[in-house]
Amino acid sequence: MRLGVIDVGSNTVHLLVVDAHPGARPLPASSHKIELRLAEHLDDSGHVTDDGCRALVEFIESCVEKAEDLGVEETYGFATSALREAGNGEQVLAAVRGRTGVDLRVLGGKAEASTTFLAVRRWFGWSAGRLLVLDIGGGSLELAAGNDELPDVSLSLPLGAGRLTRDRLPGDPPALDDVRATRRYVRAEVARVVPDLNKAGPPDRVVATSKTFRSLARVCGAAPSTDGIYAERWLARADLADIVPRLATMTAGERAELPGVSAGRAGQLLAGALVAEATMELLGVERLQVCPWALREGLILRRLDLMTNGTR
Image (cartoon, rainbow, N blue to C red; front, top):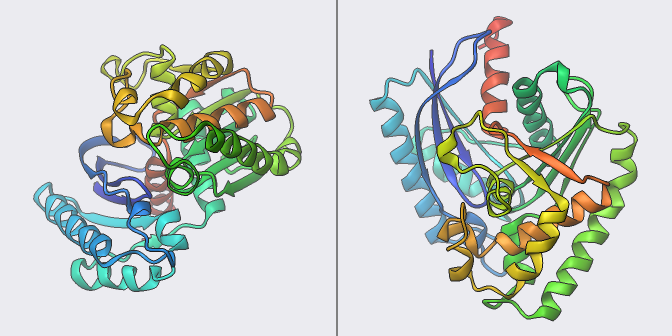
């Protein structure tokens, strides 16, 4: 059957259409997305602005129309930290439901981490052993570790690249004092959860998902997207440590000229690099592998599992 998944993230709103059948690998059929950067459409009280709500509703309407044109049998949607934490999140969800018929499911941070972990496990299989999975989004950092399809430990921290850029790294480029303060803050937050992750035992493979990690890996020399999803892509902590000081002194426009960095994400790349470097260092990770599957694929896999079990 053909499924459509609408992902409302802090940076991007994305419709992914796949041909999916229980027991088979989901095959992407179409993609439709916009860098709405919903996290930037928040007022001083943490509410999504009227303009932000209007833009979200209009784009989801276009997603529904596109899904219908493509013969999608079932379309469902979910939202992560931007709406999870917005003061008027329920009102925004109601506006989306009223105008589009899409009932967005808001994922908690731990559920987000667990679902991403499932996608990574299915991609690499059981031979990967114990996994440690890292995912830097626009609003939060998700971490999960374990031996099975569901992690033994799943955590979410308010260390998204968009959030940190908005709240702690003003300026283009930001002041070096702000960069140092953000680095200290990120490391203190990550250090708090290191003991919890260590309880899962040492990982056999460390994996990262998300656009932030893909961009950082590409800047550090990983294969370009044109090489396809099956090309192995790695990110070494030593290479990341070399580029962080450079990113700190570059403008967003200069970062956008780096390989694999889009203009829409360039402003957040420094914050993402600070989080990635801190997480890798504090968890003792010298090198990690980037996985092409992440949260959207995890949700599709869970839906297929329910279909296999006879649940609609």
